[in-house]
Image (tube, rainbow, N blue to C red; front, side, top):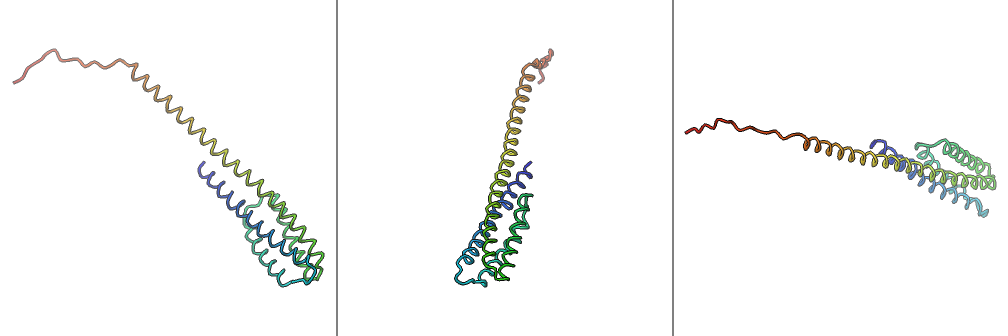
Length: 173
């Protein structure tokens, strides 16, 4: 029971809180790329490429975490969008790359909402385990009290043992 609670809390941290941080970083990077592509003044492809390299590093770490089926689908969509941004940048199709960056932002919002939902599910699981454990603790206490009352009743209901004094009272010098 305790091991399962520890695993759930660890999963809550590693697979939800840490991943939430990855999503925040990815959102910031994608937004930065969107702003650079939107500005239309000069496309700073070198800066965008460096930002995409940071995104790839985060995505590798993200992919190593536990992903639910919904997360896998959305994460794959995000990876596809990022790859398409790279392709469009290589072809100098900046407006199409900008559109893909906006799609990637939407996917990140979906991933963020999945994190909140899954985090709540894990928290509920931990709370259910601990409430069951609390109930079992109360039940153990009640059983101990009942057993102690029964033992006390048995002890008090038995006849006391009478020790007979020997009739011969020899006084020895």
